Image (spheres, helix red, strand yellow):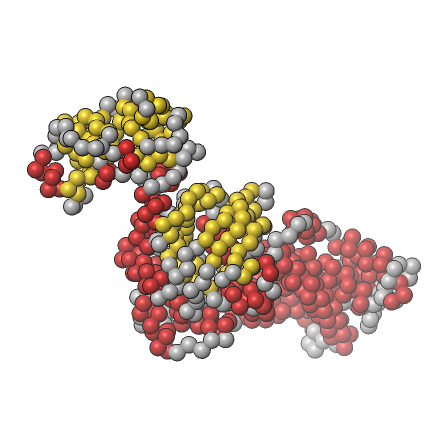
Length: 356
Length: 228
């Protein structure tokens, strides 16, 4: 288990800041997901954490020890506690086994045949020892990279989009392997722009955009209650409404044209956007008496069967809402395109986003 | 046409077996150009490695300077070396002018930018990956250098071949600083030039064949090593 935190970390390419004074902590012994669109600085951050590049400014602490205070030998020793899986597989010309043994050779480690068979089995490459590594398929190369790192049994795993361009089965196998690593006490830091993977794996989510830290926290906090429009849009939150905050009769309303949605906010006016999770919206055929402050009539435009639940697109005076209902309720209530319904949700279910 | 064929016939006859003088010229040519290539590589390969791996201020300027140096005419390098080693020059006390030493110096200067530029161009794609991989798997400084050199060995060989071919075929500059002194600084190219101008066309052809053979043999040997 390795404890890592970064302080005001900055990296530049020419005059452009790729990482702009990022300070963050990673959860030790858990999966940390660095999430963000392309060009957010995810790979750059991982390269700094693996000591492949030196930061332009700032400091990284490994178990409390400052990177800048380390001598060359100490940095090599630290690197030997870390395993890195590159986004584009870096393999030596040679067999699968040659590639597996390269790390132990550099580190002066003895590995048993059993250990090799174990990592090959975990990554689904059993029996492929003698195959030419560069002739493997894309997914196999990625898994070989993971096997090569697992054989070294590092305390910290840095994975740069380890499942990009893989088929669903390979993705699932790698995700299972990653979960197991965290369970066995390894610290895993994984960069991805795959939201579902972030939800699935993450103990902690760190959202970067254009080199800046947007939000960090538990996966459920960041992904379900995003603080910024960037994350909401990135995470494809279904209901994003934009409007102006106004005070009316002692209540704060988000005025979006024909609809005025009651919200709970400390900010009292100005432009704002909000997210309402589809599962937080109640669908009824007539008025329901409840504490919920928002209730709007609308008509169903589309219904998409997602298996256990049905996703409905409801038009309320020009504002489109997506709501989830169980298939059972859907059939019982006769919810089909054209039907008139009432949407109800609480003011506290409206998550206001920081603008910008 | 006949006289060309005659020349060829005579040229081949002179070489079977080659006389002492020709052997001496061949050996000196190989020694001077081989030595110059070796010295140039000693500086050029580390330079290419540093330029491929390190980021530093002035790097773009340096790469630009090396590429520009590729187009400096050999005769200007001859002029420079002449200026350095002649009796009144800064290195005049070494008495290098018209010795193999001056020839090695000039040829090494000619080969250096070529070997650096070619090695750098070939390394740019592979050195960073080799470095990242070795570092991430825990290589120390020495292991890292070996890993990159190992990955770059084909690039280095190609650059060496090009450098050697360039200098062993060079005439004007070598003549300027070597002087084409019989038995001392006469090499294949200067001998061909002299004999042809003296009207000894068949000797020129004989030496030309040798030059071609020498270049071919070295190239084949290096390429064979590359295939290993």
